[in-house]
Length: 365
Ligand SMILES: [Mg+2]
Image (cartoon, rainbow, N blue to C red; front, side):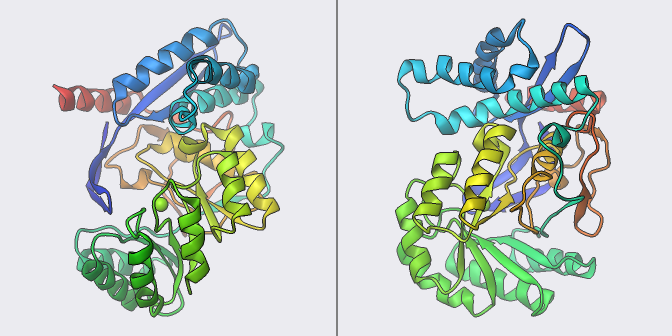
């Protein structure tokens, strides 16, 4: 568990720390790879399921990654008929899948993006993500980002009509007319709220509204999009390649927001991105309560995606400190270079891992 610099406010609540389960994979040749799973709602439950997967990976080659994921998914979920499990399975398998990629890269002396066919870009661009409880706080942070040269902004809404409008108005005022501004109500604008709020926020030149409606209905998203004067992005509606296909087929979104913890790792993330590419839709990387490990893994995957957006999300900069020692993941001009590896391209900070472990233990006592 790594605490945030300040409480993180969004439509579903307030978050104070990132809780992850560190996944370590060792080979008999002395190669160690790392990944991480999001540790919610219960890190021990995630760990228990990972232990089942661990048993299936013993004495197997990391270069069987895709086959191992298929076998684990079958054994833990499909074989019990739990057809509603793809989303949880994605959250569970992401850490193991990325750790296996880390091993594959380190064993080969190559960056993971090289094993994936090579990078199509030299850097990944990110959006500015101002935080705060009040509109004044969000706007003050946005002003600071604008002064640093940020040109794409993303703010959380869905926290009540009055506060939402105040946030949008104040942020637009400080970033000026030329910057791009995106809003994310995180499923809190049902169709009625969306029809009321979207015309109001549209006056502030909004680039897109992300996942206004509930995650389970692609149809609701498509219907909001049909009536909306502002572009619509899909986030929680899409986890799997099949869901990306459905969003594209239903014309439900102008952009797809997707991360490794939804798809279950790098391979499925790339499959999903390719489907969106065929539909002419960009992929914006998604952030969750994660550390620099995910930022590095996502960097490797995103490097290979042709239809990557130019304003991506990452969350490790909200952490008070990271468990990644190297490289420095601080953005320069809103960008990170594509990491050179080997593997996922990071070195773990063992002391920070120990500190994170102590904080977690203390939090559950
Ligand atoms: Mg979102």
